[in-house]
Image (cartoon, rainbow, N blue to C red):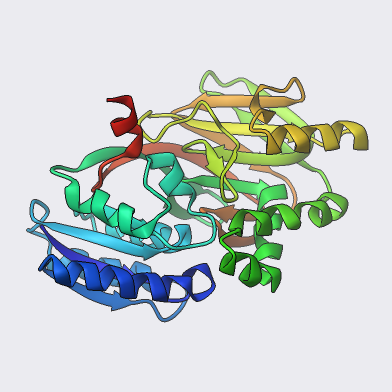
Length: 320
């Protein structure tokens, strides 16, 4: 196989640049054929992936697009490839803050091991990908991890603006950046109204929504289990809705969230389906795969598709 490698040198607060130097040495030792491009600005990976897709449009059987960066870089690359109607397999070397996709798929957090997982692959694996359409903005996109509105999106916004994130990334504690912002958001975040429509047409109204997260696999925020029953190999998404109640119940819900048990709490409502539709009635922060979507009203329809991924899974090896 030949590889087109997209590197985000700023991922993980600059840690990805050092990781790429180590990976490059290993690739050269093994005489792997590759070409590399680096991202220079937010959204650049979308454009780079589109160009690669067009250049190697007829080489899906022999060419892989590899990402060295964080979940955000992977998110952009996936969207660029799908935008170009590409079927080039996608590989990933985790070098960001959260690296949640790596956990969901079964990739090592050690970059050299993750590289070997890509090199060991013999064929692509089809994984589930979330797709959203916002009827208000007439906007669509794809996500690998989560699409969140409200609480988690506000945490992402504050964490991205925090200087503490860089310090924690240097110590490989990116998940604490997420957690460290939670209390501030908890105090300031106002509840909002959400309407969820099921496939049978039944409507559920949640007037005091606090947490609203659609997940494609278990992890969020650098390793917290938000949807422990979800999998990249299923054709469903899980929508978790939690309403704001008194402070005691709210803190209890956050404790359950940290322990990976919130979706089984009696204070949470879960919808699991291959198609979801929900509407918010106030301006709220939103995020997808840790990428900020801004503050907005949302009329979202979510469904799923599949995309080829290139890499062996540690979960499969453990099972075998």
